[in-house]
Image 1: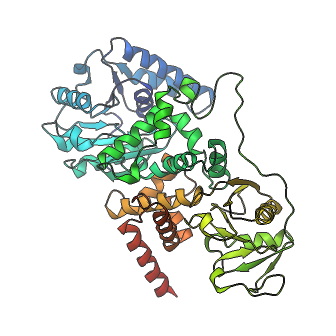
Image 2: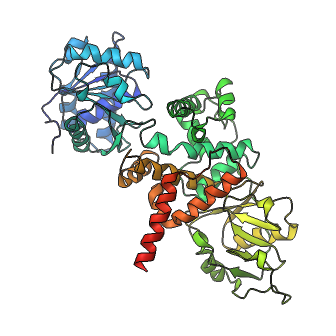
Length: 515
């Protein structure tokens, strides 16, 4: 354990929301903390604000009165950088500009000792570039906290190209000693969370731009079927559309305009219009007083079919068969229609056949319009727990097929949202891309599989990590969805990464060995 001793002073430079939060974390952990800001008087104001937060912790019985008083006594505003001399760790949380951070760290080198760790809280800049301005770049490390820092447990500990392993280990252990969950990662664009999470926003925006569904419906499907804590539109409204778009643009540029990270024109227009989300009163939703939030599209009640014919095991949606039986709907395994006519060989596959002859299939990345009289249903994290299921009905689908499919899921206790003819629908395409980027990140040494899953669960509250999702779904299924999406839109955005292909082959070999 190489964590800093609690007697070691910690400094925070930059006293905005993030800086105050980081200072509070170090303070409550037991360190003496010094605050500095270039704006005169700002450090004192920040210290007072942290004192108010400590009072709230006492009110909530998360801190004793004696603990609060001791913490306040350890908190010192600094009038100049010279006041940070003797600190063992300095965390900067200043403006997200490379030149500003480099200038600050160069000045700090003339103040602090050679053994002082210099940590940047950057979320989008290169830790390597920030440390490159130092005489001793090995002491520079990324400590990327998530907002609000006192509440969210994740800290990305980022090693730049020149970061000494001992510096990264000390930062990692210190974050853990502060009660955080640190994950180590390499200095690549977006680190772990902001790299892997891009499809969550991008695919929702793409479905909206393709007129597949409105924001309220997309958000509802992501929450109620995908199991995500928030939908993409409400989450970006909370983050700030300008902030979210800036991170997306930064990652896209840093990856040499890789098409997989291309920003959204619809989001750009929203930012240009000044609709930045909650902080401006309007974003995708209207937060002004008296405004009503639009609800998702929900289908009207429909009669459940008397039976379905199951063909194949339905793959990741296999548990639906048990739910259908529990709802009192007969599941026929024989491959014949109600009139006794055997279905055509071309229709064979993993799907359900409805009494009217129409078919119901799990979204697989192909356009529903390409399948004759087939309605697709979206992926769910847990079909038993899901409260909503999306259906995609192409123009070629018979009205009876849509009604029977709707009634079937309603009989299972689900609300139904019928969306447009969108390949991969909403959850399936989003999860497939999240898995692909996560697998690639592990293959490229950005972080371990365990740390990637931990980062995505704790950093953005995903219900499960992408690698765990891959194990549940099967890497072959994920690769198949992306391959079909790539055929529909061969820009390269959906092309399965070589890492995913290797991952799928390895999973197949392991399954073959175990069987």
